[in-house]
Length: 468
Image 1 (spheres, rainbow, N blue to C red):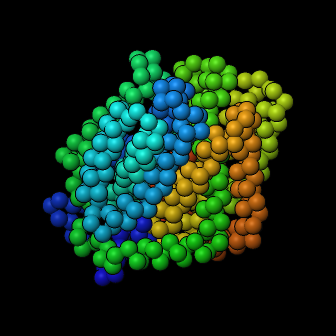
Image 2 (spheres, one colour):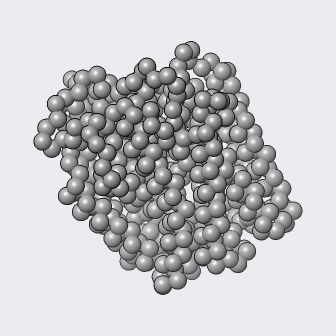
Image 3 (tube, rainbow, N blue to C red):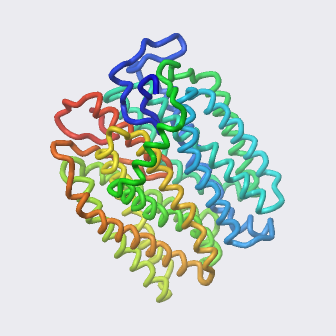
């Protein structure tokens, strides 16, 4: 490695901050004024992931009927999307460290548009699954590179300010996406949703081509190939104090993805709700996750992320057990919705706390750690989400059982990590991410590590959502 790599989603932490290069005409100066247009464009790039995942959920029953397939096969299309997002975070971020941000972003957006157009005309569930994987793979570029571009352009407290604004979009997008999708169903076919995603992709492609300059100068790019990144990933996988946390976060996220993949069949098929009514219930769950993450942020400085995990994971086990018991006893819709919303709320605490702990203990390789955490969240979720369809039987009971099962696994992982969680690094202030409630934004925590490294004399810890 000839030059220190920049902190990106796959490079190690903040090594470039100590040796900044002079900006060229095409490279924005670090620490420049934060403009509204720049933040809005990066927010739109970040939102492409949640919109790609959630927009078509209310259309699952209609897609089953039109393509003449089964519920489990349609759930596999969501699994393919999540798998693409997991792989894309690892590949695209690493590639951008070597060749810059602009070319991978524009190329990925172009492929995203083509995949979205292709879905409009699919006639088989196999082709739909393939193109959804491509959509996920290319949507990852918007999520991971928007974070990298923030780190390229800003430093210190400005990183936290920009990331906080991006996180607001990430929190709102999954709330609005099913509601927007339901409106497309009122207008006609589910295929209109993918027309909208194609148009959105074209808009982002044009804006990025016209407004986004290359943010990573050639002298700051990685020149040692992918071997350094692979070595960093390998060392993280062998470190149980990190990999156990990554698995814990992945299994807890799997409970959310299980709900996402099965909820449309539970509420629309079993309880007979309309697509619009389903969107309202889905939005309530997303709001619960967001509230949990904001309460988590309010606890910053009062309790540590380790303490939050030791309390919230057992609470999640109790709530998911109650949900399973309620489904087995035939409880009504209000009881089920209340237990689901409360269970999802615990994820709002867990998802910010896991990267906060993991990255605090791996500040020297925070880029690789952030990318692997994000990939594990989507990867484990991709493997678990289709189980409700594959197991069969009463989908409500199966959904509750899988949610309870994966949260229980997270509890066992927490128990195995008890000793390492108590061995907190002496003298280090906890690095807290106040809102990482949605798929692929774990990399935001890396930005907080970078800000902390750039300003080591800060008097107190701060969350992403609070200017330093």
